[in-house]
Length: 330
Image (cartoon, rainbow, N blue to C red):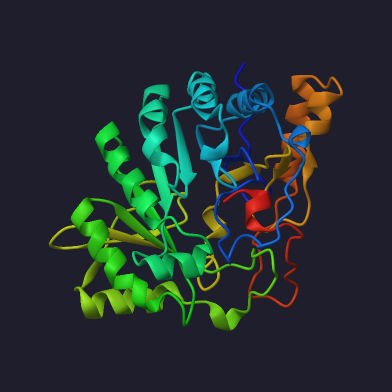
């Protein structure tokens, strides 16, 4: 018998799972982590076996795609083996990865061989000083080497994610777009969200997707709306008539909650129904106290049933989650 799909109270069917495999990272990006970060003890993080078990339960409920996140997932030494486990789960159509790319040069080939389908690489600047200003550590050359290695390993459709912050990243927009057009990468600009660990986010810092698009059209050329590859995707895609595409993820100025199809599993085993949720469901406790798969199914369904209609960033009732991006999973 096929299990009933994961449909919330607003008719949204969930088919995508974001799994954070670690809270650790080798950068300290200001929009994600504090400089004086304190990571979870390793014993509080899920093992590969625990991650695979929960993912298998999700797959039985209709999850079809998995994206691995962090922290920085490439820090996890057993990542290729974990990818191989996840790819083998019946019902999973694709396993993808979001990374900062610093360790990608050495791991692109093993990950490709393990069955990893797609790559998203975070890159906010093509200047050494701009990169260090945002990431608060050096490493641009390593990211670029990682991207080259990923292409060599056979990855296609590589996406570049760039966070847009007013009075900080405007000068990065056009160089990133030209670089991605030249290299065949799909660039996505993401609005700055209230998930920074220092809780310094302010609405005035948001460089909107509309403003970024205006800069691109002024400096490069008109953009034409493109059909989405997936109706549940967060990005609104455009293309230039002479080649190359760009997407805009605008959770602040143009929320896409009405088509959200994703759930999240944090590195320490908490199930979340929204990036901005203030409530979590503890799967790790069930795993480590002998809970069976039926108990995990019940927990997941409770989580989905409690999903709100929207995150409400632009409403007076908005409440920031207690955890920052690196603790939740990007």
